[in-house]
Image 1: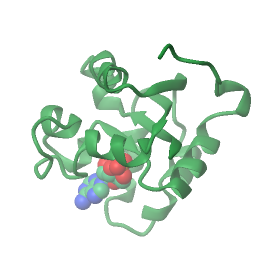
Image 2: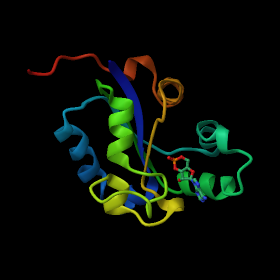
Image 3: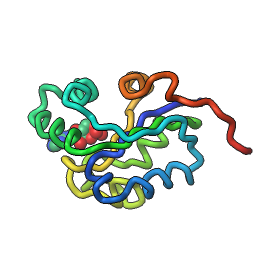
Length: 144
Ligand code: CMP
């Protein structure tokens, strides 16, 4: 099924100059970038994005981390891309993430896991809407 998913390249990946490396993996896999920008996430947006974690003990640190420098947000499009991108990203806790996944190759700590990707069609829709206007999401054909 053709799907769209939301990806955030988090502050530590931006600071470690990993933006290109991460985006290249998605392009090489054959996914289409239909939206992309760098944004400063303010506290309000961070709290909305991570609303489901508001009662967790790590919530305060999570908000501090995600607002600590600009992030890069993308909308990717492709067949079954929600689960495909989650697999490419790897387990939430980098110490459990397989080598070859983005977290498995570039991260060590759960509090600095370098990337976020939507985990379901519902969260993809919600997160895309939170970060992008309709006019920032593009429709264009790729060569076969
Ligand atoms: P993400 O995929 O963005 O979704 C929720 C985030 O919460 C997760 O990645 C981690 O960055 C963070 N997180 C989850 N569990 C913990 C934890 N135990 N300690 C710190 N951060 C966590």
